[in-house]
Length: 272
Image (tube, one colour):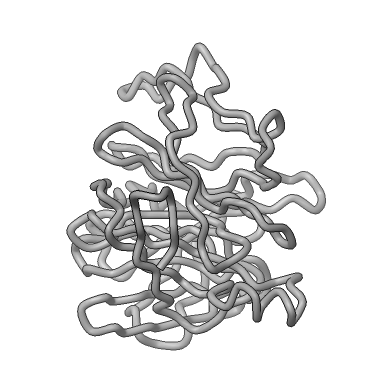
């Protein structure tokens, strides 16, 4: 168990093998599966809670970073994936150890050394990928046009005493945020619960893992799944925080979240 406050306890259990760096959890109701990636190993993964099934696949013909995997709406077994600094699509049956070769590759960022990281899909199927900062920002958002305006910072880790990097994020039905904080070698709080309206830190969550990378809801939307990493940790640190690198299932959170939205991806050949 993991203590949040003197009054609250979360149940935490690992449900996957130890990975180097898990990322990008996405709950997919049609298959009752959680999809996520092992970033530096270039793999996409599926966890099926009902059967406790765990499946992993490498990308056929690709050797590099895989940063996100999101199912495509109305295209069974087809996914948009982040491949280095590009996005593309692959087909995967959710069980085989290899996917199809990537199609429809589109370069997103041509800056040398840059790679895509987390991606989320909005309510009407658009994929969003942000840039790395030490803060959580909010914008006024026009859902029809996708336009953003009135940027503001709602939480800044650089001015707190929490020595971690903000990473993946999700929102619950109360409108509060669960923020994963990546920290490779220090005792800190890897999960923060934040009120985005006031910027108030509502809760800090200590887990038996370093390097919490992202968070998403799971079955019945009353569970949280958290991806973690074990890369750059010493053997002593791995012994101290034994769940580092595993996909974690967290229950008894007292909140309900939202399912992941499938991408409405335009499957058109890219002109050279």
